[in-house]
Image 1 (cartoon, rainbow, N blue to C red):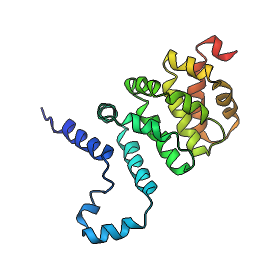
Image 2 (image 1 turned 90 degrees about the vertical axis):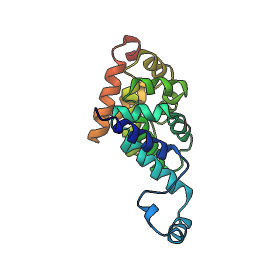
Image 3 (image 1 turned 90 degrees about the horizontal axis):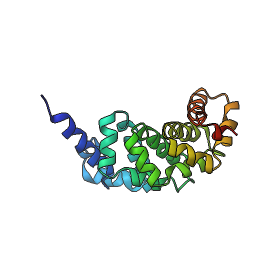
Length: 189
């Protein structure tokens, strides 16, 4: 049996959550060239690049688990507090959505108050943010405790209000979230 796969994934996660902002291709460039190129880029650019890596990596279960085990969920949760940069917010919420596919990650997100924050983001956001926010809520609401949180935070009505849109990805996610909440009659009152 080949055990290199988990080790490679762990190394990839370490790279993602480390403070390094360089890409592997950039490592091959001369240092002077990289410094000149990166001097013009704001730190937000590097944060977005790191979030894109999170999003791509969170597609498989093993990597989602490694993100949790290496402390990557808390930094993601804290990034939800900065809503000024919508591109970054879309990346953050997308990564949270993908990580929410694993129940263990949802438990951590509940601990970090991510569900409450996602409910707060379910209105007045661009569609690319809403698709991810509602996708994450749909995953989180598979758990009874999280459905209660969504209900107590007033999250049912904003979800229902999103049913009138025409964005197919958003509608798919909204129906999953509302459907998960609908298994409890008190959520639908």
